[in-house]
Image (cartoon, rainbow, N blue to C red; front, side):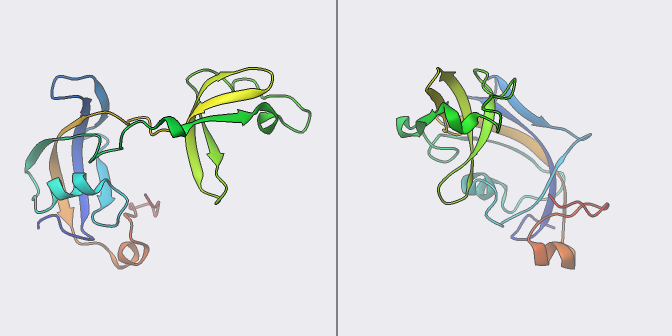
Length: 169
């Protein structure tokens, strides 16, 4: 079976920064493969285009520039938030919450979760970077397709992979 819309795909991969010998950013191996429903809009479209039509046992390697991956860094995503929104009901900031480099989840005005990295803070403001962690990077993917199968009825209804224990991913 080949990878097509709604197929359940199991694969291994590595993602490296800039090219095949770049810094390893992420690895999914045979002991912890990546399993997902293909073609549901949850993955990078350019990534899916490169996997479309592959079969079990086939390898892959390709590079995605920022335009096809997570976009370019945007200074408009550097935010200044009043420090009071990070305080609890006792007007304190929980230990470990505002550490430089720490990612926190914020909710935007439309109710959508946004991950942001803490850059700095003072008594009045917290500086945050809401760019995707991989924004501006050229990503090199390499891996192998381990399995491709038809979805179960439940998976098709939910438009996502459901493992044997019933956990949705």
